[in-house]
Image 1 (cartoon, rainbow, N blue to C red):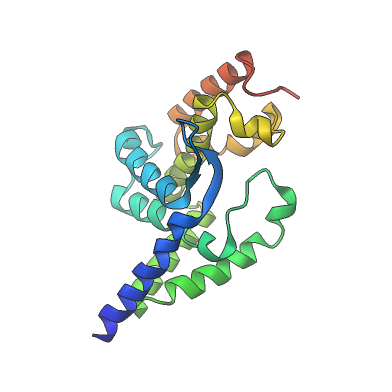
Image 2 (cartoon, helix red, strand yellow):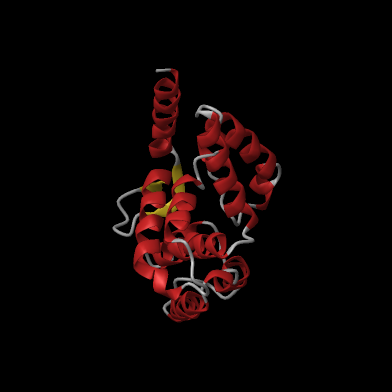
Length: 195
């Protein structure tokens, strides 16, 4: 029963992910997206867009990474990639959160989820690179569909978006080509300022 209790404690804890709101606005603009919704959407994106990965990848491993990658934000909070002040100390906060939250699980599950989280963060494997590509593509889609709402609210410019998202190509050259198209269209339509 101790094993079941640990697993249930973890599952209860991660329910908090539903209460961590991101800067991304839902495509219908009704409210901000929460981390649980973001993770679910990325998992579906992985299933649908798998054929566009640069290399053959283990889709189950990609799905696992996408489902656990933001769990640390329960403790560390969501910090915008464009918030340089908020980035200070982020790695340390997230590492402490990963140790605490995954530490609720039985040992082998704790190790597996922690290692998946580290793999995603390091982006060395083909799976992590593809997962990270999707994680960067999703906010682009949200901004395109909402006419650049969060870009405009936070003063994000073309150079910032290109610098942040060029890593999409590490996981999928096709998706990076698509991302560049919607970035270009966003500038043309006035959703994203050039400067």
